[in-house]
Length: 208
Image (cartoon, rainbow, N blue to C red; front, side):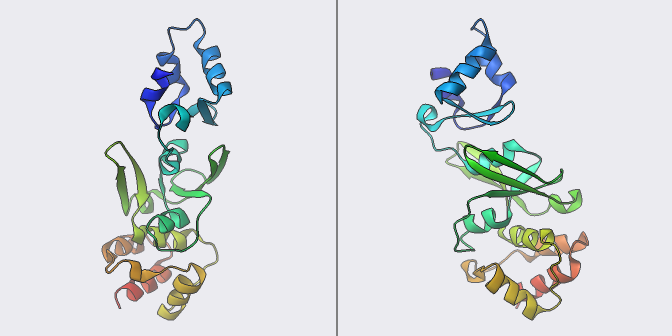
């Protein structure tokens, strides 16, 4: 369907679809029929994305993550893998949000959202623009590492040595991937008071 193809891979809500299909006697029934045909993928109640067979584009799981639950940005292991900082393939798309922590199981996989405070949330977010067609929000490399530390419970890292072991052995992060890191982002995170001692050890490690 040409109308759906024009939507591309940006998730759309029921109201938008209803407007696009208002020429039909029952747009609601038409949307249900399109979903049953497989041309529309339901992400959650009232939110859909056009299937790749119709849009002729690969669905961006990161873009979906931003739309599925917000405000949010992609982070944690998903962002670390995106930047090549960890070797493992990440199956769940993990994000940070100012809302309550939440999980969604969708036809595109698992989406997880971890809550943080608003003052901490807004630090170190960047926009990833893909082929000039769409963009999504993702943590900077520095913020993704901070997010791992801040959102992990019962994590006590009170020395540079302990932080180095955590980074290399637990997270398996290869810090040499980037020649330099923007330590101002870490300083801003420290200023919010979240895991201040641990983040200070991270700052010292990256400044060595």
